[in-house]
Structure formats: structure tokens, C-alpha cells
Image (cartoon, rainbow, N blue to C red; front, side, top):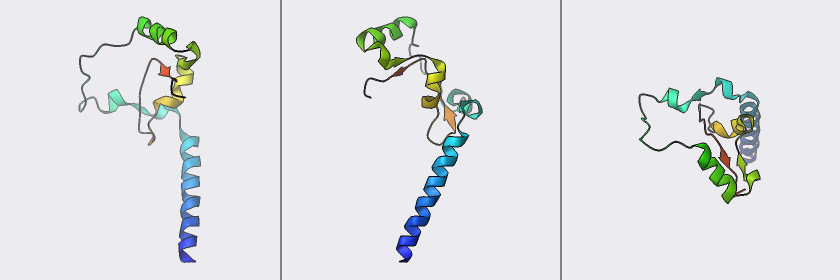
Length: 96
């Protein structure tokens, strides 16, 4: 009986934590990864995405599978702990 009570208690804690975490998520109050870890992680000399790259993905995939609207990208930019966020120029929905 005690084991059942612990599971029920944990279920309530998890549910309330999930609800709270989703309620508090706004990208405005989550720090950019590049700012938070600027002294720890340096960006390599990799190429940056350009409009031609995004056009390629739109032609290779269905155009509906490439999201470029910043407001639509917000929910995908924050990590699961809500500590840092990214700033990608697009989202590829090819595996959805």
C-alpha cells in the first residue's frame, strides 16, 4: 500500500512540475547559449546558413516542412530545462 501511495504522490509531483514548466516558458527570459557559455564554448570556423541553403531544403523537402517564421521557431529553441535557447534560422520537419 505504501508503494502505491509513493507512485501516486510522484505522479502528482511530475504532473504539477510539467504544468508549471510549460506555463513559465517564454523565450524572452531564457538566456542564449552563446551568451551563457561564451567563455566555455567557442564556435568553430563552420559555415553559416544562408538563404540559398534554406532554399535548397525547401526544394529538396516539401516547402511546408521547412519552418522559417521566428514566432513558430520559439517553442523549439529552448532546452528541456529552460536554461538556454538557440537561435536557428529554420526548422526541418522532415521526420515528423
